[in-house]
Image (tube, rainbow, N blue to C red; front, side, top):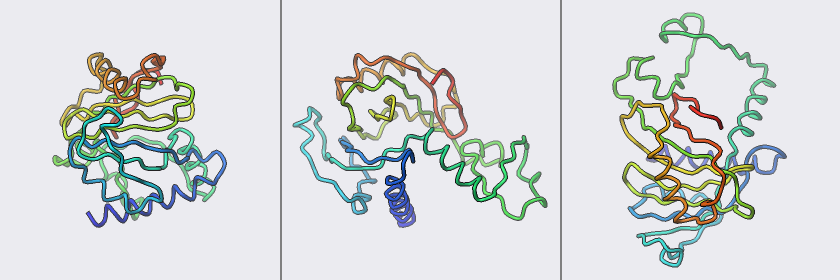
Amino acid sequence: MDRVLHWAKQTYDEYNQARSIPNSGVRFEEHLRFCIDPDDSASVLQFVDEWQRVDGANCGVACADAYLVTLPVIDVPVFMTRLKKQVADSLADFVIREIASPTELFPEFDLVVNCTGVGAHHFADDSDVFPIRSQVLRVSRPAGLHRSTRIYRKDDDFTLVLPRTNDVILGGTTQEGDWDRRVRQTDSTAILQRCGEVVPEIREAEILGAFEYSPMSEPTSAE
């Protein structure tokens, strides 16, 4: 846990610096977090500059704890484009090729960092690695919606409303051991209903796409 807290602090500091860079894809906005179950990640509040406890009941959510926190919001397509350019400017080479085993990389390279995510289950023959299937929706962003909202509970569903620059991500599912990469309409319907109950503004938002996301996957429908 100490390592995780250390990484969290370093990450927060990096994003705090990036927010001042034009078109970095990083901005800081308010985040409402309603904890139906005790949230172990609340320990990271010690690192943020702005946060306060709020009464979830005043927002229509009965919960053990609730927080209003100012957090970094990462517009991933923008941020990753900039990050890739930084790497290229450092004279790194990008090579795309298919390999079947990590052994194919030696002795060509002295050091290999395995970032295959859940794909390591097969790639590195690691039976301890398993998928956690996460399906989300992408909808149009209602005018004036800036604050993100999350309802935390320890089950296979979570409620997330995350405004980005031009759209809003709605979540979601956390289905352990599920390798299915197809979009399920039942999940999409449930996600939209849960998110609409906590943030009514998104009920009339245009649905732009649904996709199943995990570290090994690509979007399975139009984004």
